[in-house]
Image: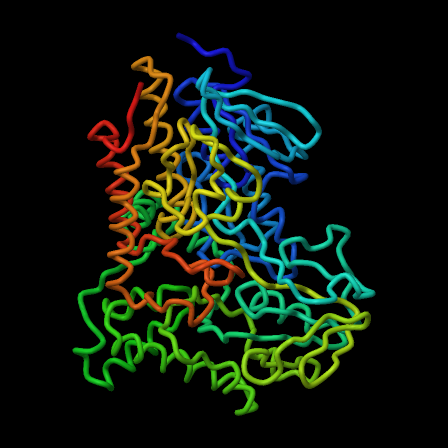
Length: 535
């Protein structure tokens, strides 16, 4: 029986994941419509318009690999492309692959309900329109739903006060202004060095200091570009098989704990060339052995302290009490050096001056009043689950995803959820945290293969099996307990959902290695999707 629907598949989100799905779903011959509430494609790179926004993966593998032609034609200008360049790249992909007819922007989805009588999805938009589809796919991203802290008095502030991922699009002028930034994660690490150059002052309110690794930005040269493009197949294979989806040469076959001190420090020093490579191309035990992790952490802290002139300030910026990578380390483009400027200040809101409220003129702590013209809330995201809980998505039983995940956010490999037939998610909870385009493409392949099986074999429904979900969640939890990431609530890491008020932390990430996870996705396809009941 063929279903009467507006589109075979409705996808929400027009970033990397949305474009990957258009490619893979069109390839199997089904109709696709991608909705996005933004004014442009790009996802993260449309919303995060703050100064200094850039990739933390090197651009040449932070890209989609389904078209060898595009990979050869597109040229990145530097090692870590900024927001504008990444968005230009996504436009290039959409143009080359004729994706624009499949995309509808400026459209916010407010609900998606599975219709038991017809086995279809009913999707409603904010402007009152309704659409039906056989398949409903979330391509909304794992860090797209901002966390806005419940600070008393926020509405009283006289100037602009906004989340860093909702930067005013009319290009806010902060030159000569007093700026307060609440939060000290990846967004602040990127924006502070830029804003400090022209703002009258920038005051950063820090709760938990980060391990920050060097970026060491550099321009793309013709020689480097040729080397990349001559070896792109190998680079893509490296990403596919790597523990974090990166094009790194690892494992390297040596452990820090077995290496003499002088040799170990020499290797740490020689490999200090920027990016996350340092963690994966020095020693194999940095994320597995507490002693090795401490050796690496001490080296990172030593490097940081060499950059900050004031010892007291350096101590405030030093991460304490948790292992390297328990919080995702951002990359440094002059973050530490910014604190040597007279116009940059740091306030410790965890141990010394908790924030009491936001006032008409600025921020009040338990000890001081700070006057600002602009307040930026760089307070992170509800990772993995936020976008899927932001509007009502109702499954077969009528329960929403938000209610289902009240205590624990379970899925099957981050790609589907029991009680939600014909619904798929890209990088949902319990998928690995890895180079996102690599994970996105592997997820899109699994989803398109599943849908192809249904179309080829005449199935109307795929129902993710509850037992398979329980099994995957137990496996994810077991793996997590074996890692150094098992730090509970002590660092308020978004990777554990510990940054969300009134919610218990939970295991949101598969730590068994991205390459292993991609193998499990392929195994599922090869075995005919044993996690799914087809009817």
